[in-house]
Amino acid sequence: MPISDVSGRKVWQLRSRNQQLAHWAMWLAGVAVFMWCWQRISEATTWVFVWDAPRIAADMGSRAWPPRWSYMSELWAPLWDTLNIATLGTLLAIFAAVPVAFLAARNTTPSALFVRPVALFVIVSSRSINSLIWALLLVSIIGPGVLSGLLAIALRSIGFCAKLLYEAIEEIDPKQVEAVTATGASRWQVMAYGIVPQILPAFAGITVFRWDINLRESTVLGLVGAGGIGLQLKSSLDVLAWPQVALILIIILLAVLLSEWVSARVRGAII
Image (tube, rainbow, N blue to C red; front, side, top):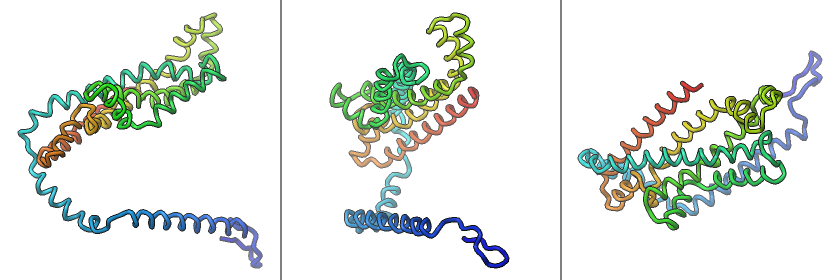
C-alpha cells in the first residue's frame, strides 16, 4: 500500500512494481501447483468410499464399544515389553550418541576434515530412517520379538540425541574451557571439568524427551512384529475384535499421557 504526502505525491511503497508482480506470480504458481496436486489426488481417490466413511466409522465405533475390560489381563505383559523397548532403546541410543556427538561438534572433534563428516553421516543416516522401517529390517534379519523393537528404537534415536547434544556442545561457554586448560589439564580433564558440566542439563533433558517420544513409537512397532502392545493390537485387528482394539487404544492413550506427565515433571525439575 503506497503512502502519499499532502500534495498527493507518493513517498513510500511497500513493494516496487516489479516486486509486486513477482509476488503475485509466486501466489499464482502456488495456486497452480496446489490445483495440480489436488487433481492428481482426486484421480487416485475412490470418492464413494470417502462419502461412506462416516457410516463405516460409526459402525466400527458401535462394535468397539464398550471395550472388553476382561482382556486387560492379556495386556500387562505386552505393556511391560513396550516400556522396556522404549527405556532400554533410549539408554542404548544415549550410550552410542554421546561419542558421536563429541566427534561431530566443531570444538571437540579430533578432525573437522575427516572425523566430523563421518559423525554427521551417522547422525543423518539414523534420523532419515523411521523406526518402523528399522523394525521391518531388523525383524527380517534377527526375527520378530522385543529385541528387534529395542534395536529399532535405539538406531532411530542415535541421530536425534547426537544432533541435539552436539549442538549443545558447540554452544558452551569457551571461557570455562580456557580456564580449565590454563591449569595444565589434559584433553580428557578439560572435557570432564570444562565441557561435561555445561552440557549435563541439556543431556538430561534430551534423554527424557527422547524417552517420551520412544514410548509413543514403541506402541506401534508390534504392527510389524517387533513386540510390545502393538503386537496385541495387530492380532485384534486381524480377527476384527473391535472391543479389544478399543481397550488397547485406551491403554496406549493412558500410557502416552502418563509418559507426557513424567517427562514434563522431570524436565521441569532439571530446568
